[in-house]
Length: 548
Ligand code: GLU
Image (cartoon, rainbow, N blue to C red):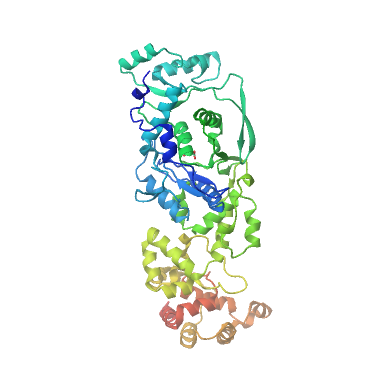
């Protein structure tokens, strides 16, 4: 039978492919890893997780991390996904060393890195398998395959295309010729070598040696449209791209024996395999996979929109990847997370449990350790994409914006109230005059509700006398004295001891100033806040409130 009929694009011998994609020239122990997403319209947080593991494992060892776009299922492909994948990796500092890096631009000598562009390679490999008798064409129709499954269900035997159920496995050449002549569509299937009760033991870097039933299925290698299945593409690509460590989801564990069989039939040394468990979440008492449909946090886009700092997402994922990261972080404050080495064999076998509260707490720490300038730069990038109004305000006076962010960052217990950039427009909006103007209604209402009401003359006096040059102690003394003149006890204790002698205490006085200056009762440190607002703004806001 002429295998060229089944593999029209087969352009190379295996020897030629070996020469075209030679073993990589890397130091001993260097690992070559990859991320192989299918562009189906989504970048799952699990993809970032796998990429982080794979890239770090490669780079720690002086190896290579590449991106391979697995786009052989054209029906499921969604336009724009490749750009989404490429830009998501880039924004989390996970750009590949090889593969697509921007706008269809590809780097690396082991490409093409889009599977749809590798047809001649797959077909060449399939032709070789056909020639060796390791593969055969199958003309079974969808109806025949359905009938097969029904019969297997009826007889309660293992479902699948194998052994005597494999209709085309042992057809004669004449039968194949006749089917071809009739123009029937066909697939090419593996002629599996697994025995009926045979078992195989295969190594897994995370799970150790695993025992499986040997593969008996004559799995489809080339589909009727000539495209490879995942099984063929995986084996061929990971061989010719010289992957040393396949890090992939544990949904592929079941087909591992099939892949191992294919590597053996080709006579290729298989890579090491690390099957990682999916990220799970606790849901009404039980654990389940983070789902694309039900959990917004399954999408990388969700973290971007909320403005979680990139470093926080990365550190959170490192926590999920390796339980030792948390202690490492405590022991190495200020050290870049890049310094933390991932060991595949330390990864959890049972699935990492996703926890948003934990992410928030990691994020507080990460933001807490950033400088005002770093926060400003990252938040401005976020705002430009997700909150243009705020971006304009925020960028107008960079120095002012950074001073706002710098409030309470230098004491013994620097502030930890920022979790994600999304909260900034609300949290610090009042610092900006145009936003403050929008909040005036709220401020007036809160002002009128003050108990005790602000005494006449108080705001004018503070506006006139406020001096931003006063340090905290001087400022406190000044404001306490001033408050005393209006009937505010210098502190709560004094007030409680003699409540009939005062209208309120210092906290009430500070409350008046907060409500007028910030249109809210909760603000950061009042002394620092007033300093950042500056004399002109403080005086203007207080004076304007005299008539409220
Ligand atoms: N395209 C496959 C997937 O998205 C890749 C699996 C692998 O890494 O081998 O599941």
